[in-house]
Length: 344
Ligand SMILES: Cc1ncc(COP(=O)(O)O)c(C=O)c1O
Image (cartoon, rainbow, N blue to C red; front, side, top):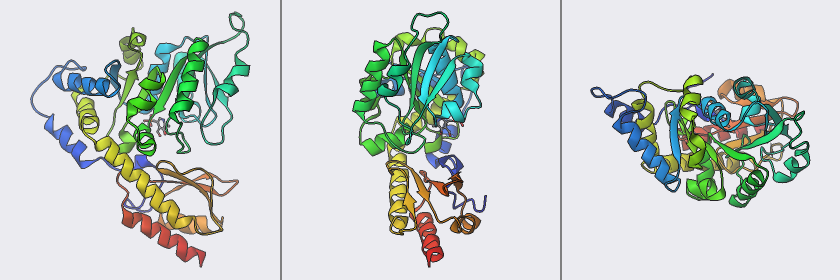
């Protein structure tokens, strides 16, 4: 990494929101019961439950992979199939943890922007009740997608109806759900619980937490036995107040929305700065905090000597640029200036 200050590689490269640091410090007083049996955890769980309309079971875990894998493991058996997109984090970036832990089959569907649709899954629902075949168990979507694109409420509702009509559950990987909410200008519940999503991995690390994720069963009845799954999955934190305090600070205030709105705005500023060059092709809709762009190949090493970012697809010269709650206008402008200079 070239500079701590100028990373467009990932929102994971950003630090921790200072108010989250303060919240961690504030709860670092005295003794409380361990493993979540404490006032801070109960408060944060209540805050999140209310955010989703009052009917949700909330469990804190360490990270996004842990939330996805333990949450989905609760809802499927090893004879089930999980449908997701071919760029789904559960499929490409979790080291086969879902297959390893749940033992289920994963079918990854083609997608150009990370979204999947019922029409792609319907033809695959064959052999239902045939003991020789894996049985459809769950659809997993990512909001916002790995390409920074958002599902509309209508698209999510259709997926939920389709899943339920076919005895499946709908899971949402919400590692960047706050960015999606900011882009849609909707409260979180409007495109989750109110659209029929059963299980949500509620992330906030990319938006300013130090660590932690929440597994939220939006259909409360579905969480039975999950505490055992979480413990077996090594995701039960003993000093739970330190995850809970971060969530309370993030979601008990508007911080989640303000941070995500800022990250999205920085992406808009960046894309406006670079899209004017005819040599640059923006390959995805910029709706949240990610920009995918094809740059002239010769320019990439020079830019990478100045800024940290990833080449997403080497064959096309496509790069991914990400902004975060921490990105400043000045950082964006420096990046745009560098591109302007290299284009001359
Ligand atoms: C879409 C998505 N889901 C989940 C995660 C969470 O992963 P981790 O286990 O690193 O917290 C990430 C992190 O990059 C992600 O991009």
